[in-house]
Structures are given as C-alpha cells and as structure tokens.
Image (tube, rainbow, N blue to C red):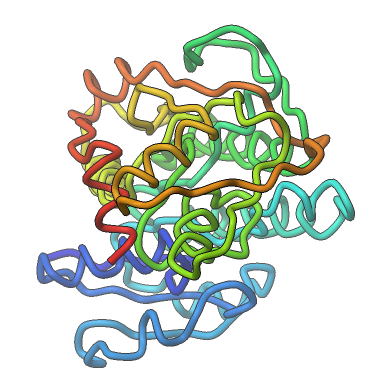
Length: 305
C-alpha cells in the first residue's frame, strides 16, 4: 500500500485515477481548488481512503501540508483549455509555471519517491509529421501547449539537478465518463451529450481533421505504471491509442452506435486547433509496459452510459 497525492484529483482524469488507486487499497490525498473539478467526483469516499484538501497549487504552504508523507505525486492540476489560453494566456502560464515549481520543490524537500506530470500532445503543435514521436522538436501552437512544455522542462531540470524522479506523460485526446461536455478539448464528450439530447453536434471546420482518442482507463493505467517503472525517471512518454479517427468519422460512428441519423452543424475552424494528431507509443510500451486496451467502439459505449 502506498500513499498518493493527486493534484486536480476532482477533475475528469484525476478522479478516475483516484478511483483506481482506492480500488487497489492505496491511500490518496486529493488536492484541488474545484475551479474546474467537481466535489461530487470525490465526495463518496471514506476519510480513511481519501483526504480531500481544497487548495490552489500556487499556495505553497497548503500544498506542502497536503503532500507530507506521500510516496508518489501525480500532478494533473492545470488550466487545460486551449481556447481560453489563446484568449487570455496569462492565467494558464502562471498556473503552469508557479504550480509546477511549487510541486517540484515540495516533492524534492519532502523526499517523494516519484513525481508524474500530466503533459499534453499540444507540445507538438502543428507539425504535419505523423505519428508524433517523443524525439521530435516540440513546437507548441498555443499558450496551453507552451505551458505544458514549460512544466516538462522544469521537471527534467529537477531530475538532472536534484535527482528527483520525474516522469512526464504527453496525453493525447482523452475521453470517457466524467468529462465535461462544455470543455473545448472534449469533442467526444460534447458529441455524446448533444446526441443524447437529440441536438446536432457542432464540428469546427470541415470534419476531416483527425485525433488520436484514448479512453480514460488506459490513461489511468499509464499513470499507475509511470510511478514504478524502472528507467522511466527523467523521461517523457506519449500516452494514446496509436490510431486516429476524423471528427466527421466520429459522428458517423456515433450514428451507428445509437442506430439513428446524426446531422452535425458545421462552424468555422478555430485558430488554435491542429489539423491532425497521431501518437507513436512504442517508447511507452517498451519502458512503462503500457498497452491501450479499450478500442473506440467500446470506449464510446461506456461514455454514452
């Protein structure tokens, strides 16, 4: 049994991570300011299983109190809206830098065994090269992508300088239960919510843009593996399905699953959207032992429940 601190533990991915850790008998401290996370995602746990601390990752004192005694830290707290980062980059970059620095310094001082960061495929930007490999030059296309890359570089620096074990996971398009359908990056959540209401899903652009969709349980497993995998420290890994689907194709897929015709509404493409995304996951497979297990049909069915 280990003790984990999960920043952003009341959010979509974070709460699924917490659920998995509790099911394994581990103790968890959830650290969240509930600006985007939901209290209902963590309210049903016993206090002996999960301790919930309400706090901002820029609040170093409260963060350190929450982290004390933890073996592992999973850092998922961020402002993850690409569109919001374009409209107003300062909050996204401030939270990313100050939050990451606080988490790193606290983990170093409190002798945490390993710190796992949630990064994003947004660091690759608009490069047309597919699939995306970890050795590619990162060229962020948005302030959010730049914020993720900044956190990655800080974590690498702390590993190189202080030998604090850090691992960065570049998450691709994660979807599944508890995802906010209002989030600009949650296209599957938006489409599912619209379809269930009988409303036309909105496609920004021509629908031919493609994404590498990965189900949240596969991402949860990647975080678990990253905590203990030998030779993972100081490294960055793509976490994805390794396959892609066009946004328009996704609507067709949903139509088949629901056995009804879905006619999307098309709007102008957003300036911050990349055209195509697809990950190479060989490194994660070889070093972490990561294997995506949930295909898109199964994942969509679980999301629609």
